[in-house]
Structure formats: structure tokens, C-alpha cells
Image 1 (tube, rainbow over the protein chains, first blue to last red):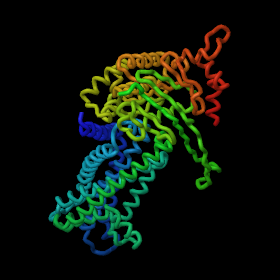
Image 2 (spheres, one colour):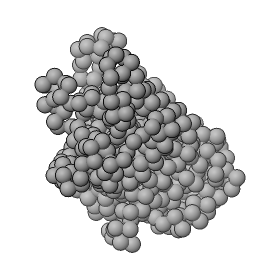
Image 3 (cartoon, rainbow over the protein chains, first blue to last red):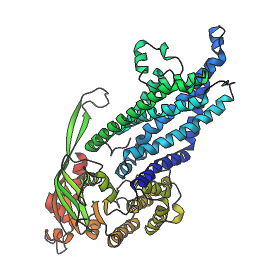
Image 4 (cartoon, chains in turn purple, brown):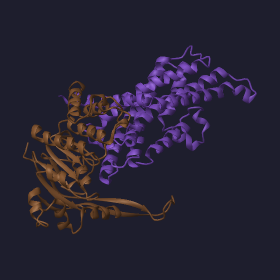
Length: 274
Length: 278
């Protein structure tokens, strides 16, 4: 058997396992979907009600689309982030971490399987939310560059895979609290990345941190595509930067993960379940 | 491949625990406590042997198994599996071993078939090869076909442990690490598992490293036994030679428990109680 076939079988193990987890925990899945959907609707209704709130005439349609793009992109990127950061947390919860780490499957293979699942799951979930939310609002996407939007989404996914790997280190280091810590990382990204408001609204010191978040560029470019119909050629520099930064973060993430895995094996942290 | 399945040379392992000086205070100072799990262990297991490591809870048996499994790294010393160093060449070692531990850790909402298929894929097996093998091993272990597709959480502890044993054998390891595989099983399940271990050894040329605190099980299954106490090997020989170290008690031949008392100055239960207290 070639090494490649063996690694692909290993990667597929994680895809199949995650699909099975969704099937077995479908109740949680429904609750989580309702939560995300209601959250998206609640945020978008802020745009719908802004004219009434401010008492000023506003371009409500633009506001609705602005907020909707932010909330949907965030739903997608956060799914990628959580699916990858939970690749260790799930093993902790189920107590199977030692068996997975004992198997002859490399961490990059582990990551490939988890990423394939995360992207597929993120796309399906976001499309379901989009389909339902679209029934509530009159979305006007005439003139939008949908192809460019998809390109940005895929480029942004690469960076979020890297951030997910960095966050996955936390449950490895802290068996009891690590999974909760990843929520704090996601919350900070939500605050600084201009999901619901322009980054320029933030204090200068937070804007400098926002410049380091890949979500800032993904969301800004997505809005340019969907609201202003920015041509794909104008997105290429940002796309290249996002992919380059993503590859860099993935590489750093894997290196850090490897160091932390060795530390966990020295200190006996694989044994305890969270 | 050499005749030595496992070589352990001078392996030493210390864990550090942090204890809060004032309980339940989040920012209270912590003191570090060093726990010596293994003290300069030397051990050679020959190919095809069933080698037992016998000792009370907390004596270092599971630490030893985790070190061989690549789940822990030693502070000092070296471990080689069929000549491959566990630190320098972990993937070669991982392909040759599998482990069954006392805690049957599974995705509890998955069925045995789903859990075993996940394990098989991780070891690079094709589903078409793995499925018939999974059925065959589970049937051999006494599991009914009707249980193959029910969630693990609905199965008894004994049935879950049999699925764990099936997972250990599924990948045809040439070194099988059995960490108290029959602890908590009913006598019938225990016999099934023990018979399967003997069968595997005879038919598949596998080497078995078995830890246990069941003296009779070790006596029945093992070719050689190391008795371990407080992280150190206090005796290593065949069960017969170990028992010959102790004079017969009231005309009855000595048991391995008598050997343990003779070597450590305390009974097995007393040793466990002492380990738990510390």
C-alpha cells in the first residue's frame, strides 16, 4: 500500500467520524442552527430598524445587506475555526484522544481530514441559514460579483484553518479549560474584524490588532464584491495576501502544535480527559 | 526483524503535579510535587512472548504501557520496539503496536462497527478489508451480531471491553499492549478475552505485553512476569521460578501473591491502599 493511500484513508477517517458525530448529535445540531439563524436575523433586523432608531432617512436596504454579509461570513468562518479547534476537544470529551494519538496518522493528515469536513460543513450550514434569512428580507444582489465573493471566502478559509490549528493547541495544553478558551479567541476575532461595523469605528489600538485578523480582509472584500460589485481583478492582491498569510499561519500552527504535542507527551497531559 | 520485540533501557519517568496551597482560591500560590512513576526500568521482551507486568494500582504499569505506546516520552533511557526507537521513529512503532486499556474509550454514541471502522481507517486499512475482519473478531469474542450496530452507550461494560479488545486486534499488531484488559469483566467475559489472547499468540505470532493486578490471570497467561512496585521492578522471571522463590505455606505451593509479600514486605491490597493514599 502506498503511503499516500494510507494517509488519505486516515484523512477520510476524520471526515466520516465528524459526519457521524453530526448524525448522532443531531439534536445539538438543530439547536445550534436555530441559535445561529436567530442571531443572524436579530443582527440584520438592527439594520432594518435603524431608520426608526435614528429618526433619519437611511439606505435601509444597504444596511441590511451590509449586516447580512457580515453575519453570514462570520457564521462560515467561525464554523471553520470551531471545527478545527475542536479536533482535539472532541477527543477529550469522548476520552478517545490516546487512541487517535497512538494511531500511525500524521498531524497534517489529521488536519486535512478535519479541514475537508469543516469547509463542506461550513458551506452547507451557511447556505441553509442564507436560504432561510433570504425569506425574511428582500435581498438585492444585482450587480454583485458572486464569483469574487466565493474566491474571497475560499482564500479566507485558509487563514481560518491556521487560526483553528493554533486554537486547537489550547485543549491539548489545558485538558479542563482549553475548549472554553477557544471561545475567547473567537469572541476577540468577532470584536476586531469588522463583522457588524467598519473597523475604523474601533479605537486606534484595536484597529492595529484588527489589521492582523484575516477576517478583517475577508469581510471587507466580500462587502466590496456583494455591495459594490468590485471586479475580481481588484481582489487578487488581497486574495494572494490571504492565501500567503494562511499558509504561513498553518505552518506556524503545525510547528506550535508539534511542540505542544511533545510537551503533552512529556508531562502526561494526553491522559486526562476534559 | 530481530528476536527482541521490546527493549527498555534505564527508563525513568517523573510527573510534576501542581497543588494549590489554599484550596478553592483561584489565585492562591501553587506548590509543585514530583511523583516518580518509573525508576530506571530495564526490560527485554522476546518475540512471541506473553510478558506480564504485575503490580498494584499506581505502581507504574500503565505509565510503562503509555511509554511504549508513544503516548508518553521518557525523561531518561530508551525504548525500542523491534529495533525502532519510540522517540526517534514513532510512526514505525505505531504501525507495529496496538493497545487495549482498562478504560474502554469510544465514541459512545457510535456503534461498535462505526468505532472499529474509524480505528481501521486511522491505521490505513480499506473498509472492504476491515468490515469482515471486524465481524469475525467480535463474533469470536462472543459478541452477538445484533449488537454490532447499536450505540456503545447501550452496551454493558463487559461488551464495551470486548469491542476494545477487538479494536486492539483489528490492525494485526505484532506487539500488543494489554493494560489490564479484563479488569471489571464478569468471569465469563474474562475467560473469553483470555482465550482470545492465547489464540492470537498461537496463530498470529504476536508478542503480548500484559499488565495486570490479577495474579491468577498473570500466572495462567504469561511466559515471564516482572513484578513492579513503586515504579521499580523487584523481580523478573517465569511464574514457576518466581513462586519457587518462596517456601510453601502450610504444605500449599506458594502463589504470586506470596511472592509479592515476600519481595515488598506488604500484601497487594495494602500496597494499593498505600499508593492511593499517597
